[in-house]
Amino acid sequence: MNYSPLRYPGGKSKIAPLIRLISENDKKQNMTYIEPFAGGAGVALDLLLNGTVDQIVINDYDKAIYSFWRALKESPQDLIDRIQNVPLTIDEWRHQKEIYNTQNRTYSIDLGFAVFYLEAVKNLVSIDKKFF
View 1 (tube, rainbow, N blue to C red):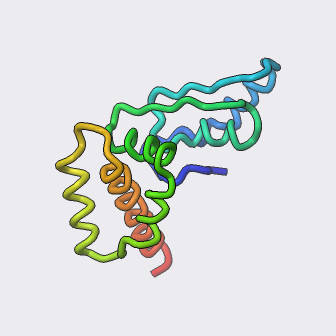
View 2: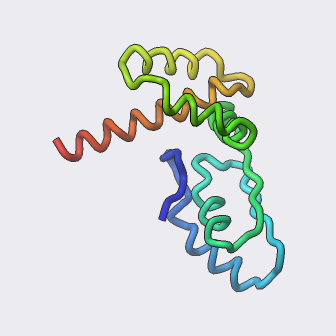
């Protein structure tokens, strides 16, 4: 199962069962999984939510992806409020795309939400193409 809220290209969630098996066979206690190029963090979330590891440390070179995960950790209510209140429109998509393209050098909640919004729209369009 992929637990990630981001469907990230090159996602590693398919290898989560293998990493889980290796970790479980190691039989160490209080394990931490460190993912320097998290992307959607599919492996990390799988290991954490299935109890294979006790904690995860994730990072990403892409400031937008990094901003999403940091905002989720430090300001989850802000992200929830935006998800619930920001409209799903073409104009909003353009606004979020502008944030993504112009504010991608440092961490910001705005950038983290922008990448989430754009990924969600991309997935909705993908679903729409499959069914219609």
